[in-house]
Image (tube, rainbow, N blue to C red; front, top):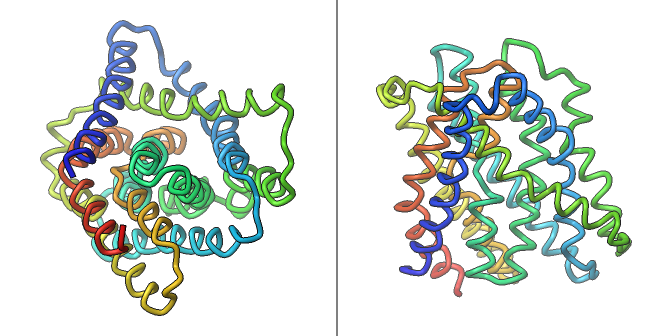
Amino acid sequence: MIDSILLVSRQVGVLFALMAVGFLCNKRRLLDETAVKGMTELLVLVVTPCIIVHSFLQQTFAPSLLGDLGWALAASAFAQVAGTVLAVIFLRGGDPRREGVMRFAVVFSNAGFMGIPLENALLGADGVFFGAMYVVVFNLTCWSLGVAMMCRGAGGAGWRSLLVNPGTVGVSIGFPLFLFSVELPEVAARPVEMLADLNTPLAMIMAGWYLAKTDLRAVLRRRAAYGVAVLRLVAAPIAVVGALAGLRTLVPALNPTMCEAVTIAAAAPVAALTTVIAARYDRDVSTATGLVAGTTLLSIATMPPIVGFAMWLFGR
């Protein structure tokens, strides 16, 4: 438990250090609005597909993996559905520009940067693989369901964008490479990996840049923000653990590492991409930034007990 707390704390520290860079870039006027919008487009259109492709390239295909892979994708999809149900039930009314951001924040966790290091430390390579599958589902749904949720009643999420988006493009390239065990030459694989690695630094620098413009006191005065934190950090992961526990009684052979990896990803704080998508679709960026920063800090207290309970429950 102590190791988990220390690991989560280190990840939180890294995130806030990156946000501090963005904060200073705003205060020192090293980045202006135009530059940040350009970074948004780079992150959305280039980096996101590379993350998905790189996730598939990280694992060698084996027929025995297909069953576990299917369950991992199904469990990850359930996590998004559970978050959506919670968001729709408990977050209603108010400013549509803010409500969409809050609902998105409940559904989508920082499964990549916060989840994968913890999965690697606690579960090893298999945990990282299942965590990567969660990231794949995350990127598919955040650019379809998530954008529709964020832009509800304001356009910006037509059928074309739901079917052709960074998530679907990444899967259409990455999954065949995984399925047929295609090994890309280093001249192609290495750039994909390097571009994928840009995701967290770019997203958090942008979050810090917007944080410099945000009235955090106004965000903290909104009771709904505390509701978002409870739903994202406590209710959503508990719903996922409960569903996985029930499924395991029906399917005793269900991989315990997969269950634990999905729990870790589901328990992570609000996705840094919340700020990016809010900025791209002219939503309430100040609320998005406040929720990313606030839940990231609170995750030090919430992730270790939830993850520890899941590891005990699933038999590790």
